[in-house]
Image 1: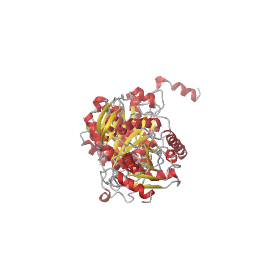
Image 2 (image 1 turned 45 degrees about the vertical axis):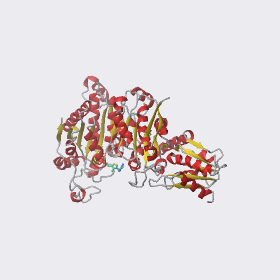
Image 3 (image 1 turned 90 degrees about the horizontal axis):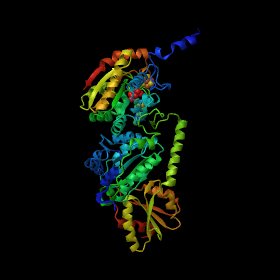
Image 4 (image 1 turned 60 degrees about the vertical axis):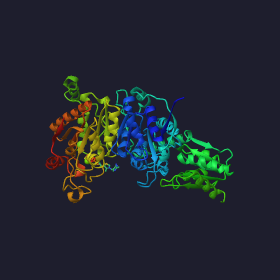
Length: 361
Length: 257
Ligand SMILES: Cc1ncc(C[n+]2csc(CCOP(=O)(O)OP(=O)(O)O)c2C)c(N)n1
Ligand code: SF4
Ligand SMILES: [Mg+2]
């Protein structure tokens, strides 16, 4: 048995970062995720693993510190919540454009604007459709438990380095703030300079040695023809992610007549809703996308011969539902149920929405 | 003897008194004739060569005319978003403290959009060198007003001359930053004569040497020209700079601890 603890989701992000050999964290306080940096400051990883932790002057500076660190081939990350992620959008598109690996955590709160500090899922579009300018994609992982907060930190870094692309953990105030049992990962040492050069020597700015050309970390190419070729390369990378990296979970789907599609804390609520609905004799299952990009398109399509209706449940006014509808392409009715502005739907409300939409009640 | 054999006899090791540093690449520079950027690049390249730190130097280029500085110096480079170079350099120097890290930024980049990043990098006393090229204008985007544009100076966005009542006053960035305990070495240099370049190179060396001691940031402002933005010939630009820029932005070391 590993190291089992009772911890908050946000604290686990910090602990998992230290344990997976993260080199640097750069952040700026914002509720409901300030515990990430606070935990790191208490833990003092600089004394233990040499990990650097910096409280930046703004989210803009923090994400650009991430860009600098990522350019060195280091495992670097930042975390924030919705208004802060909007500020990071500039840095995120530069990271994608320079093909740099990094981890960004968004513990989403209700918006728009300063909104509320309560949980929401209204940053889905921003996370999976862009957020910043240009044709880019992030690898987006949506944890539904404190355990997954732990597991997805290392997974995000692995995927980010595999594809040389920033990865984003899209979670919310519920998962960030709640305490759950978690089995923490084993400690892994940070990469040595030799390991970094062996792994990322073709691009990392570790200092130009006589045996190679200079490495340049840039997203600029003023020649449109070359810029188009580069964009083709990015698109091919995103297709490869779609091909290889879709992650999802199916719950009670085998005999389901209806399907919930929900991620993160909404998926937890849907699990409870399934129990209530099944007691009433309504056979409903849950498809939980774990990767929001790449999205489990095929897995939804595989359910179409079986289910009579799909309810997308989100703490938003209806964002992910658009991706469900794109996958379903009109073959089965798709409806949305959401509460927003920081309100969390109850399982009973979700069952009621299912009945109202599909069971004529 | 033909002219070429005569030349061949002259070109041999013992006769060499000056050689272009190999840190400066042979790529044709995109700068306008007379632009100060090229002269500063060369000075930095020569110091990197003299100090033998090419393998350990990481440059961070800005958004501005010097965005493509990475085409000219044969070192590893990071290209930053507009104004953000000090944030990149902060992480780079903290994660690789054995390296020599510098940013190279224009006045729009550093004094306008990147004001917060430079202020806080200086306040934290990061172990980096900052080259701040003050040409009192946005060169790259076609000569708009910068925070450093002088009172009355005509630019594309101050076509009747900068009116300080409505647009604020030309910012003396070096003076502001010298007040911060995190800055160790703050100097204002120029590069219009061989003598000025020699002084500049001394400052560059001191800046790089300072980064070894973790005692604060080295900030080197270079007052330069932008003939295209100023709409003057290179020679006239130097004259205008001496007459107008030097009185408002006096050269010299503001802080050396
Ligand atoms: C976010 C953003 N805003 C605006 C621009 C357009 N832009 C490019 S360079 C520049 C000004 C550069 O001026 P300066 O820093 O003084 O450099 P110079 O060209 O004079 O050396 C601006 C506004 C940009 N690239 N990115
Ligand atoms: S526009 Fe000005 S700063 Fe830019 S290259 Fe030309 S002279 Fe230099
Ligand atoms: Mg300028």
